[in-house]
Image 1 (tube, rainbow, N blue to C red):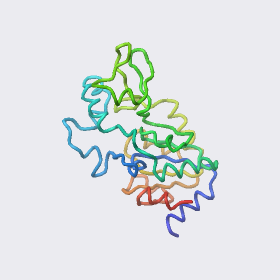
Image 2 (spheres, one colour):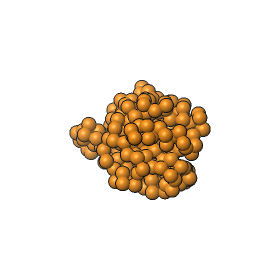
Image 3 (spheres, rainbow, N blue to C red):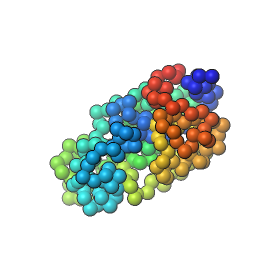
Image 4 (spheres, rainbow, N blue to C red):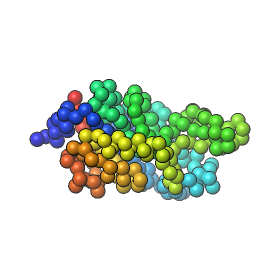
Length: 238
């Protein structure tokens, strides 16, 4: 059977679907991923991106962090692609119970999806480190240098940096949805980043589907593996 048709049948036959997505979900929207040959990790900076996007670097080199962050993480002008839009329709039908994303770009919300669990936070939420006052994305990306609160404190994006822990509520809900769904669709992620990748091991349902151009360590566990372009795959679904 054609793999797209097989995926379509799995979706048609399930009313308890969870989607787990990574950076590859947003590349069709013009957002670079991290680990592909053209990704952020293969670009040249004074510091490696994984060091810049760490807690200790933010605390000790805040100005340099924001220089990179504003230049490379600003995706406010990007729009949802076929994958985001398809998932929204699937949620409206009551078939998709949750979207779990490693992305911080907010594109699932732009596509009007409701139940989105953001493992690594969002560029759309920012808070003062001193008084906890909330700031939107425009304040941060349009600021000169390090964005500061009216109280003088440094504003920090609510994104999970390296060395920081994931939100405990997001973790518990992620485990709940993955462990109770019938169909888990994993797309656009190499499944190499821990702890996010470890959540897949909680799946106890009928069918695990992995959609990714490169192989993953979980391919052998999957009932269906589609090594094709995500945008192409979701454009083909009904």
